[in-house]
Image (cartoon, rainbow, N blue to C red; front, side):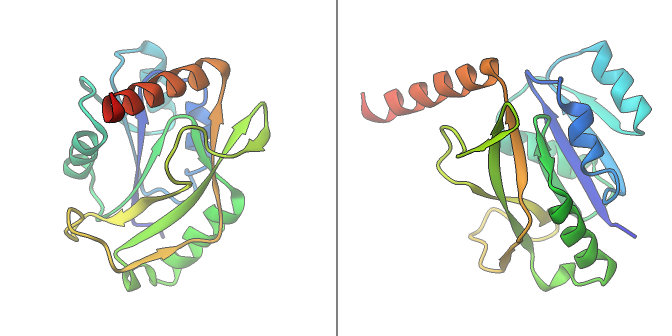
Length: 181
């Protein structure tokens, strides 16, 4: 039995939301969808898959995680964006860890990410890292440096279409500009 609340952030990409949900439904005790768009389609998808839907203005990643932590019933959170999905190997690995109640050996788990563009694996575009801390125990103080984490072997995929690549490129250029100019 899983004790994971899966949080899916939806900003400007709902096309892959069902794929994201299907990749976590076997390991999730609870699905929370946090959306900045009051979209009827998102409501229908949340209802169909038994997800809890929260609407609100997008602030930043940290603020959205705090909303998720307060809204979740479980201590363990897996945080994804709507265009991300877990590989079968990663699903099995997480399920194994939680089935044997081994999850508390670490306070967080690091997940390797790969980008898919037209179903071909690519390096993660405009991202400083390809390994992200996305599965963690919310009862631990996550604001301090984590020295008790474990890197999982399975990978997660981030699906990128042309619009998403343009958005990430624009955001990346804005960050670089603010740092150097």
